[in-house]
Length: 243
Image (cartoon, rainbow, N blue to C red):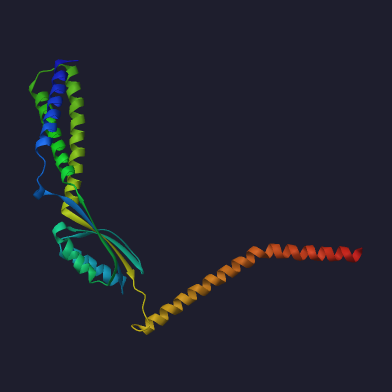
């Protein structure tokens, strides 16, 4: 093994030790806690289209955005993102959309996870800088060049992976997630007699259609067996008459 490879490994070991000691002394204080927040809401509304429009408008007014959506005439699911400090305001706005049938909140403390990610990222970047400096400032053999290039490529890939993970966690801390389920509210006769009767008629027609399909399927299923029974009975009768 070349002297440069040995030196690079020594650098890595020193950095690992310094990272471990730094993790022991840089524990975040109680006042610096970080957390991710997730709110789930299920709401019955009169109009899915109007409720979706209002939910998006409320989200955007609080500097948020719609991350994902699934919408049809009777149901809609929206995944919303909003700054964590505006979560309560958005929840109050969404509550006004209709009748809330379910609501829940989840929060996860990620203070230690975030601190560990930042320490690992800083250590990997320091290792990358030292390897880059070592590669540029020393005259080395071809074997040393290949060894450092290989190690540098590995470290840079690790830096990119850690940086992406840290950015993702930072985004989850900064932007709370809201899972909103909207269902169209069934009308009552007292409040909307016309719509109630129309909905009842539609449901009745759908039920009748399903029953007719079931009857048709039952007839189709039993017809071969019934035909066989009739043929057997006639055959038996014919044989008795001949006897």
